[in-house]
Image (cartoon, rainbow, N blue to C red):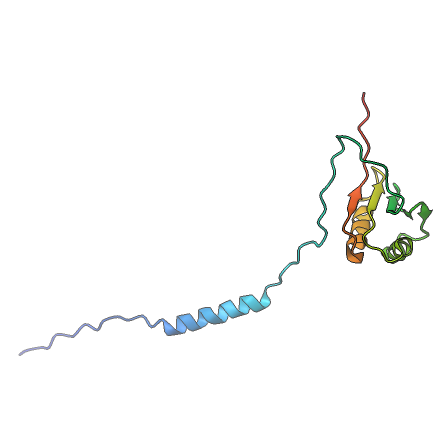
Length: 140
């Protein structure tokens, strides 16, 4: 009696369903990913050492931040610490000219959030010539 030998089937791996699943995953991840936007303020932080700059031009906007986080625009103290009142005071002082130099003078112990709020409002209004005033370190 002759038995037939079983024929060995070649094994195949069907990749079509795998490719479909991967494409669906790629689409899902692309749609569910949130893209973060980088900050719009491009600021080069000044150094405290070096020669002092020339005096502040007459036609400039100077925002002062006190140790308590209160704002003053060109010497006029604002009644509120809100960003909206700061924006309206800057708009009034600049008279719509956003090309004026913008100087931030903050107390050394002022809250960081207050200084960032001034920078953010200035950036949103379109001021590009932004600088932070510093003083020379005292000699001991």
